[in-house]
Image 1: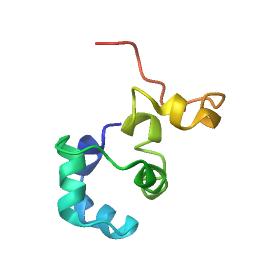
Image 2: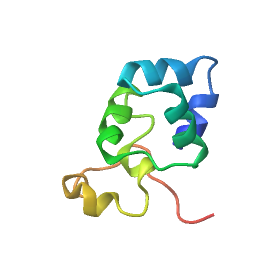
Image 3: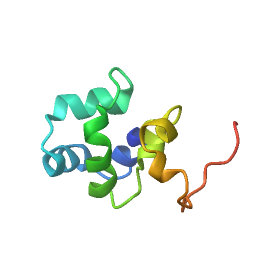
Image 4: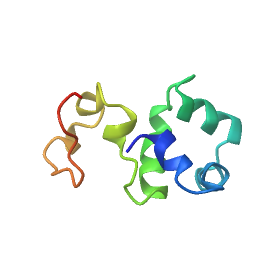
Length: 84
């Protein structure tokens, strides 16, 4: 799931997630809107804090396999369909 979708599903999620991972709310907003990419060191934190609703694959769809090769062998619970 896209970070922006996760954050808009429930009121207060942006501030709660920012607090959970120790990031400024303004950064979280920039990441969700795409104004700035999510720093790689924050991706696993976001995945954990969202209980896997937003995965590292979701946060870095073009290069997650290169960054986290250990994920390549794992089955993805919510497999992404092909391009829409």
